[in-house]
Length: 228
Image (cartoon, rainbow, N blue to C red; front, side, top):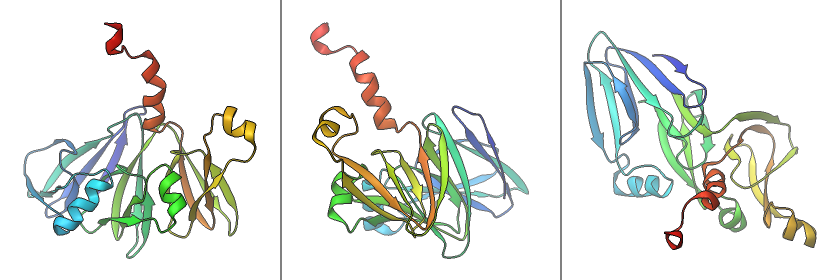
């Protein structure tokens, strides 16, 4: 499989598949494709797997596209202005990402969910108790909001992040939350009560404009029913 990512603000990943190669995505995730693809939709992992994915922001059903011709082209577009991150995962290698971040992957890749064990991180960490877990082997493509900055945290090194800006991290990174210190900081700092703490070792990917933040900024400019 070969891939090409086009576009800056609203990117699209274009995959070129050989005969017999397959990719899968959530229901409705495909943008366009050439002739000769076989399409199969099912509930990956049964009812429990479908419900877990739904809680993680994906669809109940997943769709697999298999190239039946000698060669075929299929494209998957980002659903929000941002970036598409390609990752080549080795067998057993995993990555943890925010809800709705999974775009598509080779059929050998497994998409699952994880439940946060720490109550505080689940309640106040910005993404709830459920995150997506993508496990190799194979290529996968993750979509993130706005610009993306990657860091490599050393053992014990900590990055404090405003809620929602954590897009993806390796399983070796410890995810937790801490309360903002100082009464005036809490009331007037604009960062809320809690910050997310990411402790190394491992890679982290941070996003500049979470879709929830953008929606919150737009609300004051939207007409209300009382103004009609």
